[in-house]
Amino acid sequence: MTATDAELVARVRRGDLAGYAELVTRHRSSLERFAYHLLGSREDAEDALQDTLLRGYRAIDRCEQPERVRSWLLQILINRCRTRLTRREPIVRDAAADQALDRAVVPDESEGAAWREEIQRALAALAPEQREAFLLKHVEELTYEEISALTAVTVPALKMRVSRACERLRQLLKDVYHAG
Amino acid sequence: MRDDELLEEDPMLAAVVRELRRPVAPTSQAAERALATLTGERRRRRAGWPLAAAAVLVIAWSLSHMSDAARPVRFALQAPASAQVTLIGDFNDWDPHQIPLHARAGEWSATVRLRPGRYRYSFVVDGSRWVADPQRAATTDDDFGTPTSVITVAH
Image (tube, rainbow over all chains, first blue to last red):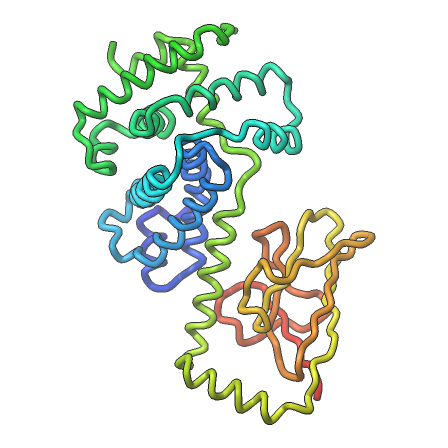
């Protein structure tokens, strides 16, 4: 039977590193995706994620709701990403490098690649707090209450940020979106 | 419009979100690096010697083994389908970035200069998978449950 997150956290607290590896395997995809889309850079996202996973293991005793360890790791990651965002210039997404990586790994139809690039460009044009709220709400599918608990931002403010993010994305992408 | 309905009502935003929910490719090595670091830390902690005492012992050992020159030891693994293989062990603090192996006809190898002694080690394949050396004995004193081999370099 598959262990629950809470059971894995209990194992980690007893010093079981393999239990942590299992937790990481379970949640890495979501964490990785969030960091990449929020920071707009593979390199920064990798650093933020690595930092998060190290901090998560070392502070596992401070995870108050083991059954929601994914949210707890996400909270650490949000803070790591925020720190990175405040230390640097606005995102200039390295589209050429990303495309090269995409081509190297997944040969893809050019139309799909162009659409992805437009999305990344539009995402990068959002204010960081709007991008963060949009990703948590619609990509990571958290509730506003959950996001509020993670980000220390009120629910009404989060709703405003998500709404503005959606509106801006609509504006930025309406000319390049082809239905179907 | 409620947020829950937004994606149903707006096909363009729904397409954006669909795209953003896809896993990032290529998968990063961040998780592997973090786990390797934590594994290394635990191994060092389990060694149980305070740093200063360990340093004194290392110096004493070095002085007493001045004549025990390091000698080349070849490590090799048949892994034709792998993209990357590195070597970790007691000799490099289990750091998966220090000793990359080089591939030739499906065999990955590296030659490391080691002083006489007993070393535990493992290969890390494609950044995450630990593989014991099929050509040498497995350790019996590894309490981490990871595949590990042992080599003794003679005086």
